[in-house]
Every structure is written in C-alpha cells, then in structure tokens.
Image 1 (cartoon, one colour):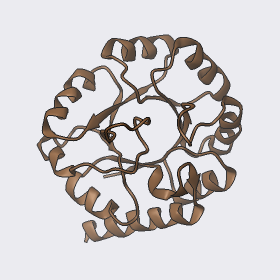
Image 2 (cartoon, rainbow, N blue to C red):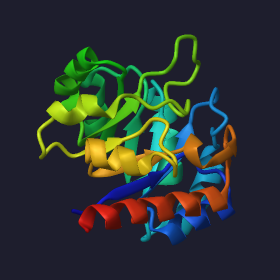
Image 3 (cartoon, rainbow, N blue to C red):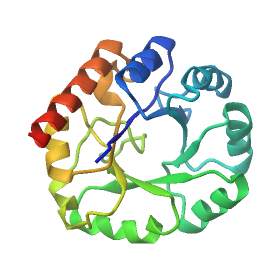
Image 4 (tube, one colour):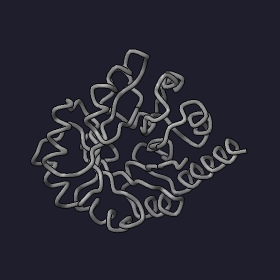
Length: 219
C-alpha cells in the first residue's frame, strides 16, 4: 500500500527541498496569521513553483472567507484546499463547488465520541485529516505537537482513506503507522526546532524513520 506523506507549514527553500528529496507527496502552506507557520500568498507561490510536478501543493486555511480563499487559489494555484477550522459540511461543499478543487477537512480527535464527526464530513470532503484536538486554551487548531490515542481509529473500516496528524515525529511514527494504519500522514511541529522553524535534518530523520517502520512492517 502506498503512503502519502505531507510536510506541512513550510516557509523556506531548504525545508521544502528536504521534503521533496525525502519523497513528500504533499507540501503544505498555512494561511493563518495566528500560526508561527503562516506564510504570505506571494511567498507560498514561490515555494509552490519549486514543488510543481513533484508534490501536491496544499493550501491550509482556518475558517477563511471567500475573499481570502480567492487570493490563495489565484495566487498559489494549489492542488488541494485543506480546511482546518470549524467549517460546516455545507461550507465544505460550497468551497468545493466554488473553486473546483479537491478539499481535505480536518477533524479533531481526542476521545471515541469525536469519531462521530467523521460521518458528517466523510461524503462531502475528498479526504479527511484526523488530527489531535487542541489542548484547552490553545489558539491553533493544529500544529500543537500533541498526539491522540491512535487505537481509537481501530474501529474505522480498512477502506477509509484518511491522513493522520497530531504530534507525529521520527520517534513515534513507527508506532503510529502500526497502530492506525493510515494511508497518509501529516507532520509539522515534529520536524521543527522551534514553532514554525522547520529543520531539514529533522525532515530527513522523519523520512528515514518512516522507511524503517515500513520495511519492518513488510518483513
């Protein structure tokens, strides 16, 4: 089974180079001013050109209005829109129709009851990203470096194609893959030396850990 790997919150050329060299299938750019990973449309457009034909460009927004989404779509020309706020299923459907792009909706998970949100979005979004619910008082909906109990996902059917996110890093990705068996993974804070500061060496270490875990699983 192939595994999609998304490096999210990219802001610099060295970081995106390391992501692409490692084999990232998706590169994410965050458009949310409260985030230390926020990037301007102009900067993301430059980085996006580096990734063209090598990885899918993902534009991540949080409860963005149509005007903001219009700027992102026109300026960056992303392959995929990721909605990481409280967008309703109706809003997800409207964005898909308006921009004609695939949409991935983030669903926050902390306990078994949170899985009920999956059904509300599963047939509307093109893909779901299951992320850890932010800690109390957190300003960011994601990128908090907090994992959740991956065993909660054991009840999901094997055909459910989702991305796993939330506190992933080189040290725990093997356990995450073994427990949750996702078809895609998303890492951000786990390859940083400080919030918003991607480290090419940590990105390379993450890819190495993924390769080791997959080889062990195949054996």
